[in-house]
Image (cartoon, rainbow, N blue to C red; front, side, top):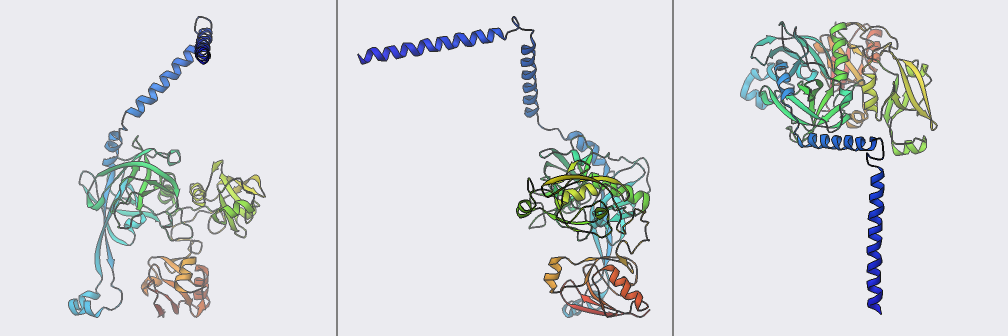
Length: 486
């Protein structure tokens, strides 16, 4: 009896399978070209062709030979010579070297650069040529030229050089905004003085803020790649597979000082604007919104009713600044600039960095869970839209007696246990260089007055008829005091 039911079940299953197969054949038949206009069949063929094409593309290795061929002739070797003074007294060194130890020493440095015009304009990093007394550029064909500094911008770590040469091979600009994660890129430079070295990798991340540039107005939105970079690559070219310049290689993160898997480049869309400003005006025309911004946290997202943990939170609004005029307030979260999404403060700085004072932009922000978009006219550091000229408007740029200053960071205050002062970020020709002031020094008092900004330094010196005394802290934590008589 049981066997009868068993064979019956098998028979029913077989009949069900036959019926299903018959129904499927009928449906397919109705979709065939004989019963339709043929569109389904054509669509199927197009899909198959697309899949075949994608398969072929994946099977083919990425060809970087063209990018290397057009880039290598445009990348140069930059050699610098600087004068470095020995700091402090070292009786042991003086015993061995006598007075020779106290004499200034000549120090050589090297890096890379990229030719951007046939008449000899070259981009490099500011840190490659900073404080250099002499700069020599060696082309890929081994010709050597003395280079002139056209301008430099510590806030973006970009400098522009010029050599007297014509008919030079030069690289074309690409568009760093269009770079995608996973896209192949090529890095060309001169690591360890090995000229014309080519390495390859993919774009690992965009908009990285590494806090490498110690400035209140720094713009850091690095392109991260896994292309191998080492000492000497700084100022070199990062190009896409078309051989277009998409970044200037600038930094690595490494416990040993050598390549460890991560390298970083300044996006060319920032570089291009800086270079154009330096060539046209001799000074970068820096545009600002007039806000102090911070990262958005999960707590911020909860308290401010944000749809996601993203954007640039306004921590403070500058009085009479562009943001205040546009109605922006503290705790507003900026999420777009001219329709381009900004998920971090670095991405917002990158977008603003492409503009000049006087440019009109649209800011999209979130307030109380609602989205608003307002027009805003960007201003310069002085709060207007005037052109900044080289050697002028020093008050605007935080420069006093040839030195550039910046506010103390929270880490500075903690490290030196102070709650006031101003930090030296750059020293050029002037009284402060004459008395030995150097980058990294912290000024606490000028003419007996406490200072917290470049304006305080200027005011303290002006009110007392000039610079008479200055006190502060050196980078090693020791106290210093100068008395100066004009």
